[in-house]
Image (cartoon, rainbow, N blue to C red; front, top):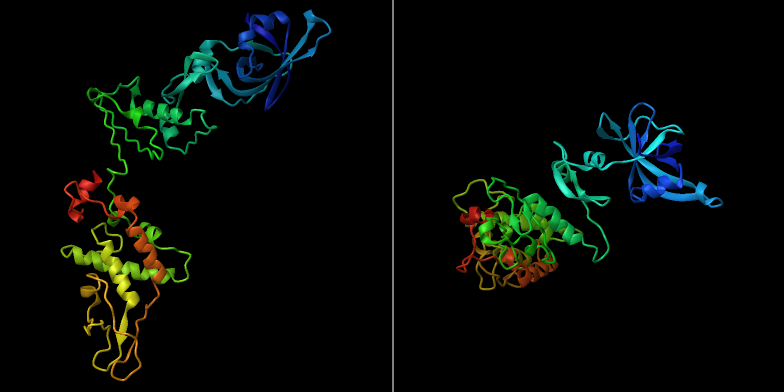
Length: 379
């Protein structure tokens, strides 16, 4: 081949050292002998190794026309029958010829194929060559884009996702095709909306759920999510909090959904978190009358509580005081004062306006969402 630039000086699995045969070879190929460019090295078996340039140095300046130039490279794959494969079984021995890698082979290495079909950008060494990856594998793995402030991380993410959904120069290139990719972006700093807002005629759907628009009723959450929101697991009585909260939620779900059978802690049906608060607050205040004919919780107005589920959700009540006198004998209930911290934390969250989308979501007409709105909420 006519574009030989040098020979192999030494080789190892992670480094192939090449010596350039003369200064003319360097001058004629200076643009292709830069850090990050690629060389093609014969392996002695009619195949070639592709190696990336890591370092270039001169070994002897004593005679300018006979300067000795060394290029250190790292092998990345093999060219076998004009196809590229990652890795290599054979390494070149010293004196094997070295060539610059032509653009056609670069295109085979980084270009499109049945497997590599998703464009990620262009090759820095040759901007006419697109670099493509396996889209299914790329989006099926965890990916991190890192860089210092101002490096362009957000723009990179936006560009990759625009490629996935078919946006190019503010046009929907898939507008006439049945493409149906769904991508969810957690846009904490509100950076990405402009990148995906197209003119109406482009037929591109952007569902921008701002904090004012998003409605995610707490009653859609499962037991684990509810407990992570309301209960501190590191508190000594967290097991009692969980047990009481679970019972109150189930009872309240049954109260508001009388036509649904077999309701569980995880059933996604409506319940009133404020009524749950009332129930637990009453359990926390409860005083039990110990008179022989009563032996049940007793309110300050002398009302006897025979069924907690029928009364405790409606309001927070005052109870009779604890007493050892024979005529008014009463003692604190089994959970009296047990949930002070839990109730304080729950009350704080119920009054936090930042959590309205979760704890107090309302419809456009001001009404509350109920179990019958489940389908609308999912949409």
